[in-house]
Image 1: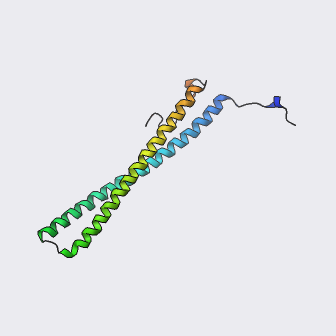
Image 2: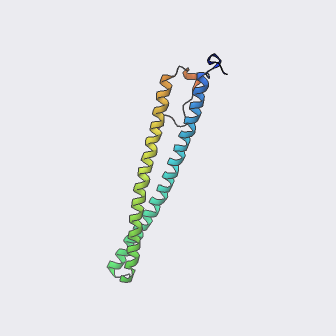
Image 3: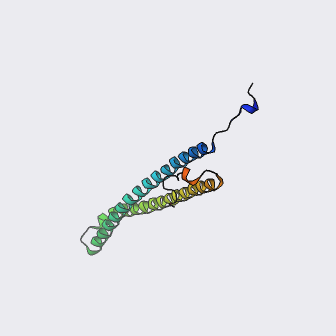
Length: 133
């Protein structure tokens, strides 16, 4: 039977390093996901601009009589595509904001933990990108 006096706790510096490594992995994951969101949004915004330009030229051509009225189905399809792009861009913006908020929360957790620890500042390193919001 184990004695209560045989229990030893880990060195607080080791615990701190474990916490830092965990927070660092989480920070990197948040940053990776934020970059994925931003890349998707940038690509979608580019396609959105092209689609909106094509729709505008097609409508103008139809108004000038350069294009047949039968092409109105193309205008309708382009309009649907534009509306879908706008919805997706708005959703990606919300996701990006959420990732920024999560990243900021992670920094707050790190800051709260670092003020309550007695480990010397030279012994600790902030998680990747810490301090960025």
